[in-house]
Amino acid sequence: MALTITGVYPATGSTLGGDTITVSGTDLNTVTTVTVGGTAAPDFEILNAKFLRILTPPGTAGTANIVLGDGSTTVTLTAQYTYAAPTSDAVLTSTLARKFRIDVNTGTAGSPIWTQVRAITTMATPISPTMQDDSDYDSDGWGSQAKTMLAWSITATLSRKVGATSGNYDPGQEKIRSAHDQFGPDGLVQLRWYDRTGGPEAYTGFAHVGWEPQGGDAPALDTVNLTLTGQGKRTTIANPAA
Image (cartoon, rainbow, N blue to C red; front, side, top):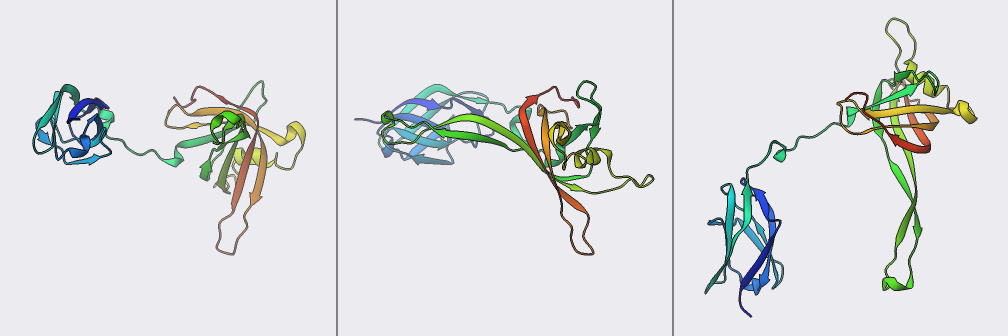
């Protein structure tokens, strides 16, 4: 066989370089030089005789040739890789865990009054799948699972605070606390939780309440571990903050 190059994936990358692409061909385990758009690749890795991984150098917007050499010959993949100018989303910025807000319904299901639950210091919103083994004789000895149910919950830590003027606990926290030792409908709270910056994550559902005051020594702050266990479906809603 001889050195050949037949394709590249992905076929588009940033003009800033630094993208990882994979080329296919034959005898690629003999490659000693790689250029993209006329510039030497800062790094490349031979995967096997058929595949070569390349770290792209910076380039000019438009199509670029990929040239491979083995010391005695070169082969070219012509105009099948494209450099594209980066969009504004090429640079990512972190979002913050504190973007989420919880509201509890202090009215009725038919006429909800959404009251913010304040003084949240940590929060997580896991969804737990129920998996069932559905392995069979045809899987060549490999196990297989089927997802049959989902369960949602919210875990949070609340700082217990009172109003500077009224001396009353936060009304949202109190609505939740009042349900933690009740049964039936009185033990459920209706919630909505969402990205307060207006992002796409926004949900509502009913939940049972687990309320665990943490106590502590003399200097400790009064905190509660809150567990809200979903009752039925978690429903996606339009974000109230959007």
